[in-house]
Image (tube, rainbow over all chains, first blue to last red; front, side):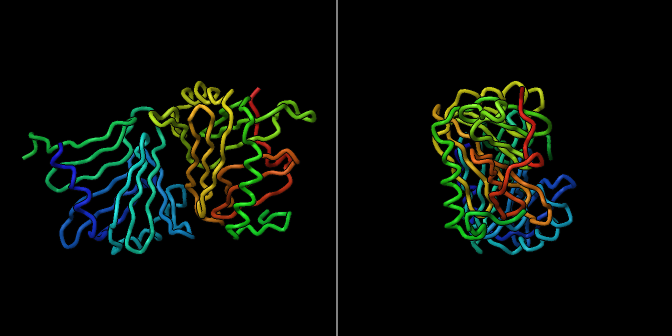
Length: 141
Length: 170
């Protein structure tokens, strides 16, 4: 568990390679270069991408507008990740000074967001104030 | 309606600070009538009942098309996507808490309402497009005006009327 502590900071300096949403505008952001380094996924959370003076797009916006706006996210480089207690709200910052804010919206037992790595380790925030790492499923080859 | 009276400019951060000062008139007033209607819509009254409409307080908060969460330093008390039964039961627990501060972020107009028990109610703007014509939240003021956050990054102070009054809990 402790050995995983530096894995998210190790992503600093890594570019976004892909950003997509499902039909409910749940967000998936892949980080990495030619190979995928990690995948950030919102689960029971709202999100908003903004700069200091402008909101770019958010989870409650029209789906087509979200898809169009997210086409500008690939290529941005991750510069930091901060989380807030007790909610596990998260802030991902990028090198163009934009930020992606993630806001958990349930207190009923749902997970809020996760970061998965190619080797099967994943950090999951929520439910409630829970947050932690899970290793690869031993049943997976 | 976009824009304000009082000569305030909704795109000027200094004027938003002036508007937030107006909102902070609610400081020291106690919540009552906290009510969940449908979806994540919540209304809360603050201060003495109005003589012209005793179902409303001097100030009235209406959470409309926004995500929100009520929390302490230690725990999450409720959130906007909780099941309706949970919200119906938990929203009235806002009653009897006294507001100690109101903050509004720019450019999102997300707000934070601090209470005397150390808890806070946070909103989180989820609709950024002005053409959506959807308000995030509103605060009704004692002088029959209402601060409207949204649509998008726009805010306004306008006359309160039947069209922008929320249903209040009885």
